[in-house]
Image 1 (cartoon, rainbow, N blue to C red):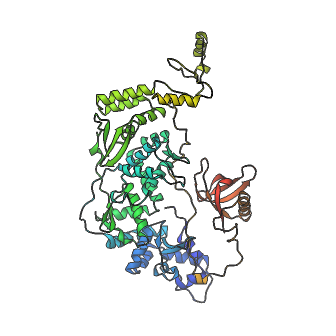
Image 2 (image 1 turned 60 degrees about the horizontal axis):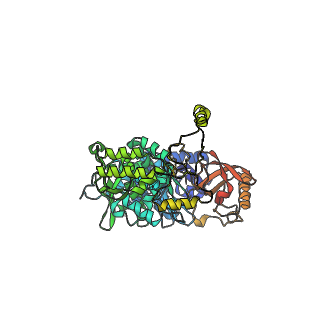
Image 3 (image 1 turned 60 degrees about the vertical axis):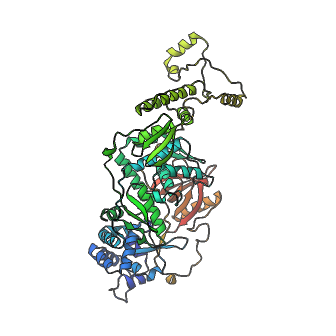
Length: 595
């Protein structure tokens, strides 16, 4: 979880009006006393927070509110939708949870992190009593590393430049359709819920630098992918599971895993979630299925889920790609990721239905050679797959055709005398900077006719690209394991009833210095930053991204504002207090958080 709405229960109590605390939390205190001392709050919070007290308070709730409380804790950062006035809700008045509202006026219920371990067992019992159904059909056994091949497919599509984006930023229809054909995202739910699983997989790949984003598409980063492949399968799966919990709703990981562990193999009904929360809950469960945690299916008009049943990965070893004489390919879904990716360097994947289906393709092979992969590696892999002789010979001919000629934009050093060549070869400081070029004849294209030369060569059937010409540019390496981005909490705790709130006075909230995020000109952005520095307040802003700082919403304590041709903001980013510099022109919207 990465929710930072309220850090601790004691903080929440201190935010509440004294009269409210005396009326509802300190019920045994003297009614005439209306001043809260720190020691009194600390003592009351300590008494309330004891495991025995928490369990007693929970069991005093009605069955309906016990379920609501358990679901609010399970759903973590997402919280549970609340329709009624929170300050008349028995669940809120139990102080086991708190209400929070976003800028759209939606109120949700959240639990306190420190209370969850003591109440976990009761939460699980409550949810299972309501949601567990009979075991009619056990889940089908699944290969535990399936999701690793889903990530490999996304990497392969990136290397083949098939991950195209719309101008609005989402995936194109063709890209989305192709991903759905090749990723095992959830069978019955695959075609009806948009791109959420594809986006989750791509988000993981970009977080791991396996893919990197441009304005038009997502591209492949070979070095990062090879580094990812070098980790053990178990470590890669655990890393993806951690990422999924952070990105797909922020549910409480330990609570959810223990819930499905203790379900006894029963299918749990999603009707346990309130109607307003059910669609979002199903989307989160689809993400958990993608990560290999659960099986998810339809039963009548609702979705049900249970803990996934995995097979021993060693029982499916020694699998290989089958390549018939017609250049098609049949690839077991349980193939290791390296072999799956190796195929995509010579062919295209077309579908996944228990097995991958694909075909060796000349254009894909040429693109692979152009990206810097040596043809001999492809031939060795085909031989390892026992590819038929006609396939081997045809691929060998394709390799020869690709290497017949090429146009290069690299700098060439031409030696016209054997004596000069000998000097170059013997002078190591220069020789180490050069690569000898073996060719039958080298031509210089007349200046201004480069495009025409390419057209003529293409018309003659030549691929004029140089081996390695389309090698992807270097991408900054990842600096560590995945860290969830720090962002502005969408919700803010409700600490007093609307009728008890004072009439608003002349405040900054409706100006450019208010909390609401606003789009401002650069000069006004500088004024807001200077104001925050002067008053010692934090800034929250949406950042469009720059080298080494990803696009996100940030909360910072501003330290300085450098003015000039390229204004810069330096500040400490919450909660780690790491110093970063932001380009002010990259701030799309900004607000000032009051003390």
